Every structure is written in C-alpha cells, then in structure tokens.
Picture 1 (cartoon, rainbow, N blue to C red):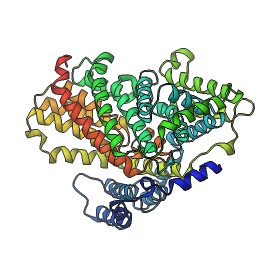
Picture 2 (picture 1 turned 60 degrees about the vertical axis):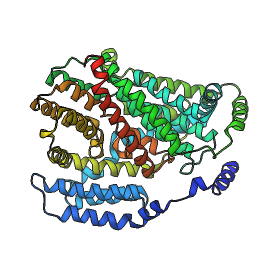
Picture 3 (picture 1 turned 180 degrees about the horizontal axis):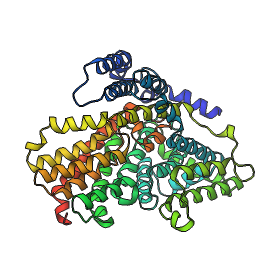
Length: 495
C-alpha cells in the first residue's frame, strides 16, 4: 500500500498524467449551461411531424446527458441520476419503472459479477501469475503485450460467442498487467491504450466471426430470407475477417500515437523486475487452484452456451454464468473471497443504469428510428448513384450506434431497410446488406453503447472523451476499409 501511495505521489509530477488541455477546460466550464440550453430547446420546440412527444423529450434528455458525459463538468454517475429522475418527470417514459428499473438490468449484474471475478483473480494472485508469465514469455515490450492481448481477443471470438463474456475474461488480465507496470487509472496512457484497444479488439473480432454475437446471425437471416442471399459461416468469415484485421492493425498503431506512453516508465529495466516477481509467487496456492477451476468452468459454460439446451435441457445465459462464477468465488470453503473484499464500483453501476435508461427511452419512444428515417431522406439517397449509396449506407450503419444502444435493434431496423432500399434502386441487396451488417458490432463510441464498453470503462483507465476520440477514428477507418472491400475483395470471393 505504501508503495502504491508513493507511486501516486511520483505520478503527480508527471506532466503526461495530470495536464488538462485548454479545450478540455472549456468543455468542463461550458458543459452544464450547454447541456441545459440544448435540452430545453429540444424539449420545448414544436414537435416535428411524425415524431411522438415522448420521442422528442427522450431526445432532449439524451442530448443533454450526452453533453454532460463527454464534457464531465460533474461526475458521470450524477448525470445518470439526473437523467433517471428527469425521464419520467418530463414525460419521456410512460412509467418511472422504465427509468428506475434499469438498475436491475442484466448488464448491471454482469458488471457486479465481473468486479467479483476480478477481485478473486487479484486476491488469489492467479491473474498476476498469468499476466507475469504471459508478459515475460511473449510480451517482451509493452507494444508486444498489447498485440498479444488483441490476438487473444480475436482467438476467443471463435470459441466464446459473447462479447460481454470475452470482456469479462480479458479485463482482469489487463488490470493485473497494468498493476505490474504500475499504471495509475486516469493518468497512465498505457492504461488508456490497453483498455481502449480491448474495447476495439472485442468489437472488431466480433465483426469477423458470424457466431461471435447473436446480431450477426440475425443479420444473416435477413440477408438470406429477404435479399435472396446464401451467406454461411465461411462466407461471413472470408468477407469480414480481413476487414476486421486490417482495421485493427491500422487503429492499433494510431492508438499508440494518440496515447503515447514511452516516457511513463523504463520498460527495459521492468522486464527483470517482472521475472523476479514471477519467481516470488512460488508454487500454485490453494486459492489459485480454486480460481483456476472457477475460471475454466466459466469459460466452458460461456463457450457451450448454444449447445446446453440440447445437452442438459436448460441453458445458462452469459449473465447467469457470470453470477454463478461470482457466487462460487464468494461461497464459504468453496470460494476464496469475502463480500467486503469484492471491490465493486457502485458509482459506475449507477452511471450504467442512467445510460441504459436514456438509451431505452430513445429506442422505445421511436425517437431513434425517426432520426434514422430523416437522415436517409435528408441525404437524398434515392437519387444517388449505386457506388455512393453503398458508401453512405456503410457509414450510416457504422455511426448508427450513436443513437441505438442495442445491436439487435440496429440489425432489426436497418438491415431490412437497406435491403428494401437496394431493391428499390435496382442494386444487389446481398453485398450492401452484408457490408452494413459487418459494421453492427462497432458499438464503441460511448460507454453505454455496449456492455463491453461499460465493463472496460469501469476500470477507470480512460474517460468518455478518450473513448469518443479513439472510436471516431476507428469507426471512420472501419467504414472506409469495409467500403473498399465491397468494391474489391467482395468481387474476388464472389459476393
């Protein structure tokens, strides 16, 4: 503990950690008045044609909360509390249970379980041992370590068909690695890079594998049924994995430039220290063996989720498996952790609850769908040439996650709409719909846009603004690479 306090004192003197830019200072200063003005304008203006009053007010609250989350003049959980309070007060939701009930969402329980699992791995030293071994064996430098983590994310996508499950597996490993490197949350650029690239790698790996998320499978169903396609597992893999890998590699090196961590620590001398730390751990302890068994059981249950109904007559969801793992960690004799030892970040749970409350209000009121329809009309897509239509659709699909908090909702609304658009314009709907579907997992711009984002954000290593900056770049590059693939690679593989 004394070492950590001393490290924090030293880090306060490092300019890269605590410096606030003039732009960020202005954002904090004007965040609250800007949020109030924007919210009032959107709520009090005449209701646009085709939009419900609920949708208008939901958009107002969403916009105000979004400004406050990005500019951070107040803690993000306070913004969420304000949003939860305002949604029923202004009539953005019909019942206050719609807003107040979000604290009971499955993602909240997933986060709690993730915090418990992380605490168990830390206490048992299993995470530390795994991280030290991995770094000393393969990650000779921090950059190699980051690449290794990206590779693990892509490998897991083939075997664990859940983005949230993979995030719950990866975050504890990242936390231990950052502890070894003495990275301070909120100050370390290495911490920012590792966690943000974890978010990116999870999303892009999911894009590359059809079975990596239910949204991909639903999209394929629409493509094959409504567009007359014949897309299977290998078709998806051949079409999407190259774009995912190329985008990940480009954004990986951009991330290193955006969050430069070269001057944070002498990594060369740290290697010997890491080897010594690994030796000090000695043989596997009983707690480590318990943690290994719980960890393996969790991975197996997540990886076999699609087959459990046939095997056992029942199925454990991702969230149920996570809660089971947390329960096993906390059970007397069987587990290795006491409740008071579980470091659960309640302020982040409140933030997540508010974020989902606002997002759900936007979806259920029809506000999100209204915005998308207006964008399509405003862009005049009916009069564009086919090449431009394809590019616009891909970019529109990519950034549509800014107003939809659910991949399934996006897929359900957008894929059939783009198939119908392609047919009306005399275009082949299969490549257009497939390219659009490949963007659906890029839900990476804000913490509430996916459970994965929330889990990684919960570590405290990056801010909302950090994520927005990195995600805008990633989404743009991803959309550009997919657009290029449609006109080149798709033709090579016969799509």
